[in-house]
Image (cartoon, rainbow over all chains, first blue to last red):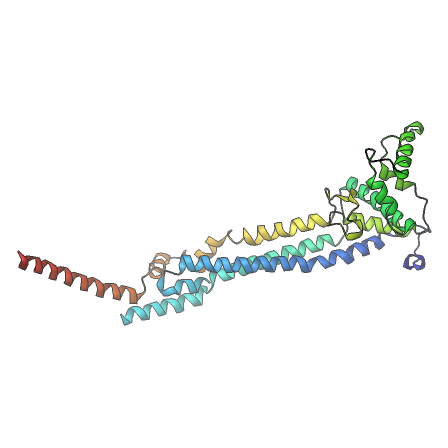
Length: 71
Length: 242
């Protein structure tokens, strides 16, 4: 087992916090993708919604020129 | 008509050069800010940390017993049985044993012990350091949905999560604050400056922007003239009728 082969300047049975930290990091570093996925999903919905509002709000003005300027 | 079309076109060119896609740019800024915040949240999670000492300790304890039990029995039989213990149930050897042990514990000065605490009595294991590391790491993530092996081990109801849930709360919160609600903040200012209508000739620009499309006003003129003519005709017909 890895733990038996590992040797540090500590007395037997003591393991540096770096060990736990490494395991914790191996999980936490995987959190970015799901977080960004969530953002992408919200972004898609929000962008569509904003486009709709812009069309509603500015679409009537000046040949749609106004709307094109805005979005 | 041609001059008005030309001025529409000119307006468009001038404006699009100055301020094309005002809202799109605003949204882009909000997106960038949100991603920056998500990265920041990732950064601060890089280092393991909690001030929820009590919950962390509690979970670590439970996972220690849990992993110890797993390792001893090759499965979590003992723990599941301790877990399922209830004095009201029909007596079995296990139930009797547990209630006997619990009832005499106060005699040696240990009070308030629960059936699950008996798992702590399992003899120390040569793998104890490994189990200790496992429990320490696992307790940090308590609050995540229980994985299959722990599914029926309901001591781990996720009431006070340590690291996992704070992240799953903060990310949506950050997205909501920076992006969903954030998009509304400053949009008015962005439109004012983006469309240059806060400048010196802002009023004129506004007037131009809300100018009716020429084809519509031309069409209206034509229709109005037609209507006028028809009204006059009607009046004349009425007079003839009299």
